[in-house]
Image 1 (cartoon, rainbow, N blue to C red):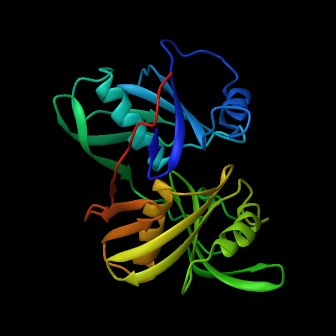
Image 2: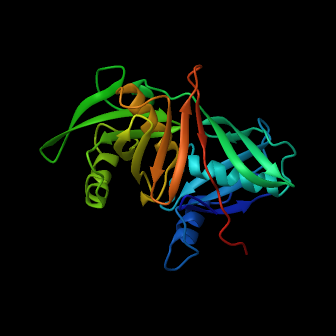
Length: 267
């Protein structure tokens, strides 16, 4: 399946096994010798929610959450009858995620995800340094200084506002920021081009996967960075390479993401 080009292999397990999903992800996600994907999503039973989701990146690492992945996951479990209601709870390493689906005859026509509240505390991202929040903070890379905003949106994200996004910047600066010494667990890197206060363009270098066509948590984090830097309103259309997500921060601080998820093939 894919969410705006961010693609995943879904595996359904009847019981929670102790399989080496890290090794499996490396094997299956290789686009030359495997099936090919940005990561694998494992459907598992849960004792805390209606169903459990694990995600393993193509390099074998396991992030706590994935916005595009959770939309694909929600569509899959609903259409395959693993949940009965169109609002349900998914257990992730980042906590309980609650999708709200619209459907016609058990076919999903719309997906809205309650992504929870962003965490701004520096130590939670985690990022080394002194100030509590990382908003418009300078960081040095290869002798140059960049202005970043970082936060935790299920997984760590770092945003750079640019006049115009270039693929070269994503591929050269992205990996250097991902593994910057200030981020002991690494960070996703989002390049954000503000079109107006209600529209932004985002390209992401994903921790553990490299350049991706879309990143759901990155889109949410980029909107939050826009709000924190007074560049956007609380509801923004995020333009990604293959389509759009709509991200909104409600008055209670929770972030909601709406967007598509599609099947590619099964076997």
